[in-house]
Structure formats: structure tokens, C-alpha cells
Image (cartoon, rainbow, N blue to C red; front, top):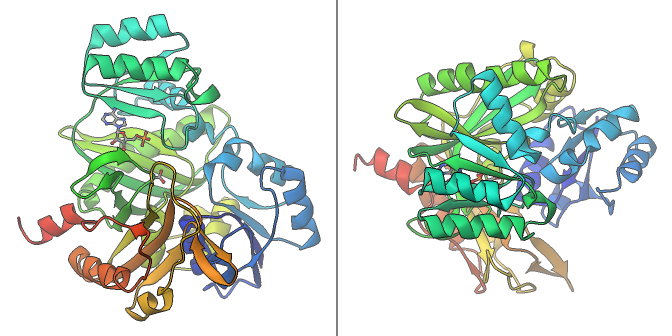
Length: 425
Ligand code: AMP
Ligand code: GLY
């Protein structure tokens, strides 16, 4: 099979690495890709926002399957446009990608199909939103409705913070994404990421992970896209997975079908495991980044077989096997992240890190005059497996220490919660 992978981050490098291991693969192309992905794929300089150009490339190169990594093209309808051109796609339709593209849509779906989530209100004007926030009080959560590159959520511990966040949304801080706002009840518990492969009818559980969103050790400092992750998430016991499937995922699949927008692709549920059980924080309609990296490290089965089955509505016949090991990934970021990152610093030591038994996925790199350089906020994902999260953590940091990149930084405590559990602390 000829496969085209869309995207350019660490998530896509992990997908490319796993796709390249498939005996079904003839040739892998990636657009736009990155220097790490170029180890597995031929990079193509396509503008993925130009769906007609992507379709033309697929026809010319006889692409059998397009795998869409990031959310923006899905929300913009690339799945529909490619399918209309007769091209097979792994990824949801525009209507199904509303689960990520509109927080209000997802909250209304939850209300209609009785899916446990935080109580909420939807607002398109500041006055009504303010009145609601003042009535409910803090802590409270303010969310821009649309895609805001992970920056549209404020967990406000005080009323003034909540009111500031509301003003920021309606002042256009998040562009059109903030024209509508969702205000939510503050939930407490332990967070977990839960993934399913979906084909419109069947949802196949596809692993669990925990992410570290804050930039600093001990989970302090500003939010990021994710500074590291590990899989599996200990809080997702078999019972908790069963409840999540029954109470959250299956009603979502039925609801989306009933609304005429059946969901096919990756359904990524951000969960809060509360005293009453799992509650939905939000949906994403693609793999998590860096969660995907640890899932790919643990996946025993052929990813291409599974993605084909999802694209063809055949997941009911499939099962998934995982390595009986934990995986952990450490994000190395450029100084300045999550603000404006410093670009262009030279990175050495990738081979030495790999010699430690780790995989090093590229997230934001470029090649400049023959040297590998930083070209984004999150730059490398150093990933390892082990019998325990603690062992995977030791191996990942041993590899991190082989990377020679003075302008980079990482958290030193990825996996701490699971390691504490393992050590019985
Ligand atoms: P999101 O960008 O929607 O993943 O939200 C970012 C983070 O905000 C989540 O990972 C949670 O830590 C937190 N969060 C979002 N919604 C809530 C909520 N209703 N209650 C508590 N924390 C929340
Ligand atoms: N790591 C969180 C996300 O991909 O949304």
C-alpha cells in the first residue's frame, strides 16, 4: 500500500515509525513531515490546507490511504474532500470532528445522550456569561468554543480570574474560536487520556495514557501542549475502562450516528476520574501528542492493518495487543516554550540517545546547513519502555542525558505519579 501521512510533529513521527514497520506498506509519503519523519517517509511539500492539491497528489501517486495526524485539517473537512475524490482516509468527517472543533457541540451531545461530564452553560455574549459565572462562583472553568491550539481553557480559582478569561474570549484573544464560550463546573479527580479507534459503528479501546500539561517539575507553571506522557495510565483499571466504554464512548458513538455524523477515526477522551467514576473533560478527534508516542511504543499489532479496518468499517472483527510493558516519553523543548521558543540552536547526540535503547521522535526540528536545529517549541520526544513506569523513566532520562543541546530543557519528573504508586508511596 502507498500511504500519505499528514502532519509534522512528534505524533506523526511516531505514526510514521510504526507504519514503516508494516509488511503491508509499499511506500510512505509525509506532508509536510520533519527531518525525523524523513527517516521513514518521503517528504512532500504539500500545503495540507489545500485539499484539492492533496487529492491531486493522492491520484498521481496512487495513494491507498491518507492518515491525518492533526485536528485542524479534520475540522476543516479534509476527510470529506478526500473521500469525495474517491480517496480512502483514516480520520473523521468535518461533522464528526465537531467533537473537537466545538466544545459546545460536545457538551450538548453529552446532555442529550446522558454522558457524564461537568455541568455547563453556552454563551455568545459577555453579559449573559458574566451573570452565569457570578451566580455559580469560583472555582469555575472558562473555555473558548473553537480550536485555540490548546490555549483556550482557563481553570479559574477565583471570580476575577474567571471574569478576565471571559473578557479575553469575547475581546477576540482566541479569534473566532472565542466568539462562543462554554462555562463549566470545576471537576476534581485524576486525569487520564483514553483512546479508541472508531469506524462509524464500532469503538475499539486503543490504550490509555497520562500527560503532563504544565511546563515545570511538580506540575507547576503555564500549560503546554504536553511535556511528557506514559502509558498505560494506572488509574484506568479494567473496570474503569469498562465504565468509560459503557457510560461515555458507546453513547457518543450511538449519538453521533443518530445525529447523522457517525464517528470514524481516533476518539481521544480526556477524562476526569472522580469519586463517582469517569467524567468527560473533552474530546479530541486525533491522537494525543505526546500520548501517541507512548501508544506506538507499546502497540504490538500492525498499525496499518488497524487503520485500514477503521477506514473500511471493519473494526468489529479486530482486536489490539499491547506489549506487557510501560512506555514513557520526555518532551525536550526549546528555551522560551510555551512562550516564543528560541529557534535555530544546534542539536547533537540523537544517535547516542538511541544507542541507550530509546526512540527519539522529532517534533520541531529542521536541518540547516547540514546540522539538526530546533525549529519549534516542543522539539524532541525521547521515548523508552520498561517493565514498570519507573524503569521506562530511567531509560528515557538516560537517553535524554545523551542529547547535547544546551538550549533545550525538559521536565525531570515525567511519570512521577505512577512511579510513586509503584514504589507504594
Ligand atoms: P483542555 O484544553 O480542554 O484539555 O483543558 C485543559 C486542562 O484544563 C485539562 O487537562 C484539565 O486539567 C483542565 N480542565 C478542563 N476542564 C475542566 C473542568 N471542567 N474541571 C477541572 N479541570 C478542567
Ligand atoms: N497532549 C494533549 C493533546 O494532544 O491534546
